Image (tube, rainbow, N blue to C red; front, side, top):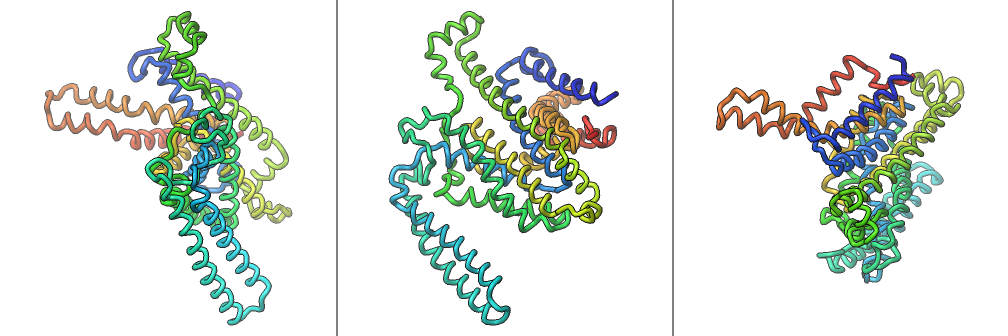
Length: 451
């Protein structure tokens, strides 16, 4: 089958799954548009993440398994931008925190200057050591005092600096546009972290790069979990403002109620569907823009250069290409997309929950999407995002149905039957592994291979 036919056919089949989920109460399908749209919204976010990983792996062959860290930074940006400042937090210690961070950065910069400009020898080493010790203790003295002051401000409800929302504690939800502003900020925050990571880790071989990026991602998540002054840590930040209407506001609107009645729908159900559709529209616009830009870059001279570097670094370097610089460039771009997706996901959830950032969900599953969809093909990565997320959600009911069928001949109350039925909840990992193996066996280059 030619690629020009295979690509739309694959997307049509995946679209059919979502339509059946919304319209048909049969087998594993819920027959609920609310359920279908909920899966679709997370599939759109996952497709953006998969597109970011595909830029790194499919374009340049960079094995990044630190996706979770960049996604978490995107979620953090949503809090830092869209939430209101905590009253009294800045005066209690916010300025001390900023001063401490500036002092810490200045200490590092000073040590770099000393290393580059002073004569090599014992004297330089002693001066650098003295700078490090003095800078560290001064940093901790200022920074810790600021942290203690901020975290003591109404810790049951806030206990953190807050964000940039101008609406204040009483009216911040009316400024939903701040959440949209947080999306590119999340991408920029992840890009900045990727620059630091790339400068230190991109010179490593692929397997060591994977270990380094995974470790750095865990460090990022650990910082977000433990630094309560930043975003409340594991106490979570809830009630993030929305860029779409609230259900309760729609239910109070006479025009919306009239439209729901005209469609023969319950107003509560209609309001939840309308909100999910609004999110779907926003996410779809973002995804389409990213796909267009990714496709243009892929077919540009820059994209051909990236693939040449991926296929043979030595030959590309011999022709004068800056391999390290291009690797850093593509690593930053891919990480920025992961940060953007993280901000979108936190907006959809309405809360930042650092405890949920697990490598299984935000690294392993995204890699499965890229491999199954088609590494090196942007449309393949997007297809994988839709398909794998749908299957990830539906595998549990499929597993229960399969176990019910297998154990139909066993007596009710049987220990074996009970054990097998209880095991259905753990079918997800097994199923993802089977799907991955089947695709690698029968379509090694993915469902939509790179041309």
